[in-house]
Image 1: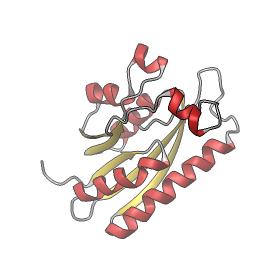
Image 2 (image 1 turned 90 degrees about the horizontal axis):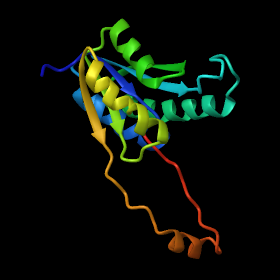
Image 3 (image 1 turned 120 degrees about the horizontal axis):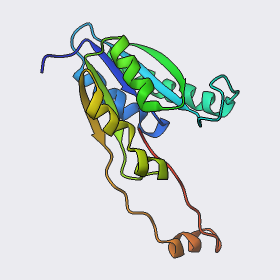
Image 4 (image 1 turned 180 degrees about the horizontal axis):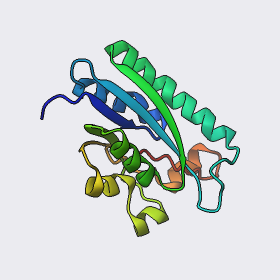
Length: 165
């Protein structure tokens, strides 16, 4: 594969933003540019112009982490926040409209109920993307047993729903 010049990097959370961006920087050809994209995915019943300050603040943090990596690597980058009801369709539209040569995405093992029914963003893009995809598959981490979690929290079990793109 020749080194791509136009790379879309799909960023979902701050925990994986730096690693995905480093991977994209390593794949980038001379003079390449990255488009760092975060999709604020809203429920179908929510208007796309709804005020979601927490989600916008999260997007800013994600971009700060990613832009530190592009600066270190000396790779040109721009950022884009997309508000959409479907991350997969929003990303697919960007890939097509901007004629991207590569998309770098993260993939996780946990599934929401919607993903079990409709499929993940990564699977949808694997089937329909007009360019090559590079998936960074996060290692599956065993969840602590609820009893062990309860021990460390004074009797109440804590759960988290951290997922990546």
